[in-house]
Length: 198
Image (cartoon, rainbow, N blue to C red; front, side, top):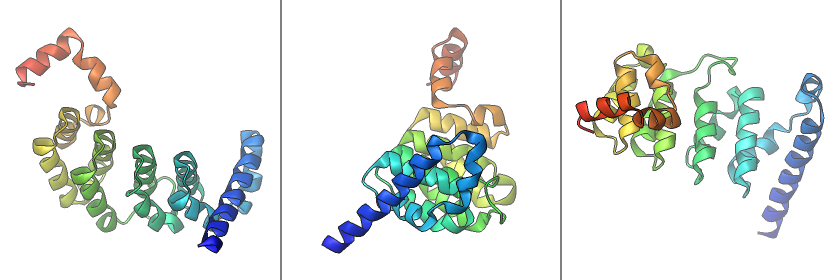
């Protein structure tokens, strides 16, 4: 037990030291540190560090600099107790821009569908919708997950964006919860809500 605690502390120190060096440099000079990224330590911190901000920061870093070799970390991050950490894990798992290899839709869609159906945070479920929408043309299970969500999610805003995704209204499907709430307060938004029986 003592040795495990020492290893976790050492790993946190390695990651913390690297991130301090990274943050001290101007953006244009940070590329010089990329070969020194402590990937194994960062992967462990992304899952096990007690600080959720550090876990989230490590997931973000891994998304940009070690995405392909960190898929297992993103998958574990989807079970994190903190919603914003799960959101970062979602992004890392489904971001195609940061990968060298193509996203394996057959591996990712079941995971995203599970998160959409079971995550306790409406914010997290909301953010899964556009990710699945981007995969609908390559996956009928993605379409089915959005269809179920559009009719059965307990959160009205999640149902709205899922419906928009199914109808091909990409802009509406990508709208944030903040924007949707603000729109609902306008006269036009209230008219739409009463028309839809909300």
